[in-house]
Length: 438
Image (tube, rainbow, N blue to C red; front, side):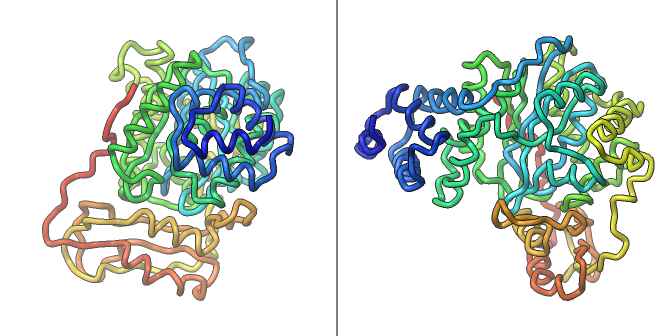
């Protein structure tokens, strides 16, 4: 079956057969399809659409292009959480140890940051010597000993997705729901899960901006998960301001440790709230809690008692890192960074903190990537002191940019100032969970 015959089918608006899709994904993996042929078909999919059967066929072919992990010999429910990506979105570092403390085995395969969004692997690598490059055997050993493992996608897991995503990114075909679903679910289904909770971001700092489209994506993800026999639920959550106090890899890891240690600053309250909500949904799906209220209490107790912190310390040790940061989280912070204060230009209430602007600025000063191959400076970032709804006076410090040099701050300090809008009247409170989708 020739690539051009399959491309022609979709170019002309026809549905592809399961066999045609399998040939396409096999060609992506083996190199039998050239980049220009892959991008031609992806663009035809983007323009002419995919039906639910085609979407599931692509997901299945991508899933089975690599290895599907099996944890049947671990006597605990297997579950995970996945976020579609946001600014300051650091909940995985609280959720995984909290779930492990409640009896859930969590094989969390995560990614790196790209563009204005951060990546869990980059936050973890801010921990001295922490190793995210784990084999399947190592993931299983770590899970047996501490209940969860945090690792990057290996060459064995959904290898088709690596090449496809890079080409979609280069051809502006990322924001298409069936391809997003196939990309996310092929990796998550490879984890051998019993249950999955998805955090679908919506708003200015999300890849999908509108609530209606975010709900549509959430529904498609849930339907696909269920069709593969995995209990799947989605929470559509707000991304109209950065989540929590910090944006930047080491800073976000520091914030999570503060939460786990019971030393949470008030600006981090929503990081904890969202972490508890997502993890509680996992416990209900795994039938470890009778309802969401009981599940919230279990997760909160795991955090407040120090059990989750203990799990995280053990995990850090098992994955080669320095567990002493759990006792002294400030060791993650670089005291030599230059602080550039962002000051309020008027008095009133903070009505906007644009997460897209904040994320882009952190990326520009070295805290993120424009290309997947870019290096990341784990230390730099931004401190979101004033949150939406806070009352401020002219001249108050509403944010702090942390850079290696004062010169590095010059290109973005004015841009950051523009991320804030101050109004005479208090804005309506931002609802954190905008919708629940099953």
